[in-house]
Amino acid sequence: MNELALFNSLFDDFGSVACGLPSVNFKKVFASPKVDVKETKDSYTLEMDLPGKTEKDVDIELNGNVLTISSLQETKEEKKDEEKENGAKDETKWLIRERSTVEFKRSFTIPEDVNYEKLSAAVKNGVLTVTMPRRAVALPKKIAVTCA
Image 1 (tube, rainbow, N blue to C red):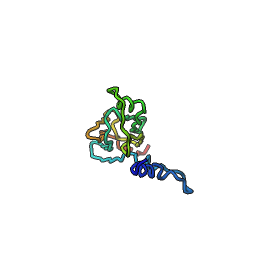
Image 2 (tube, helix red, strand yellow):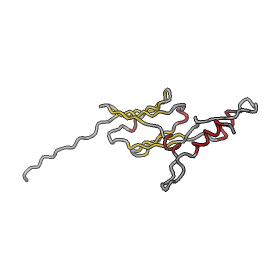
Image 3 (tube, rainbow, N blue to C red):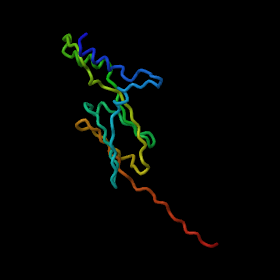
Image 4 (spheres, helix red, strand yellow):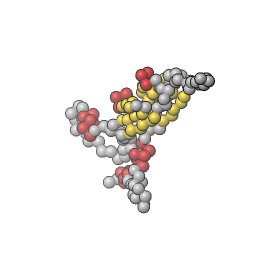
């Protein structure tokens, strides 16, 4: 074992020690992609940083008024296939490997005035953009009371 591998392993289990509190895996906590949501008079726009991801890596589902964005971690078989496409034996030994693919799932409650039929999503330069056009919402109607 070299110094780099020792240094890396020191932090692998950081945060998983109970210390009298529930165990927290900081790698998974900090792996959740951050989101910005902005509002205009015509739409809402959600932007999520997904460096290294493409449209094939992201799954978006709308169930009722809950929008769920997720990405599954690559299986070990897929990684083996990628590394050995040319059939050659890979003699590479990793000293530090921090850029791993992490599975995530985030859910958001969508406002009532979103036109669910016109939602759109695109990934460009590692940023997922979900556009949610607004629709007109019926305003409260005042009912006149008359004398019978």
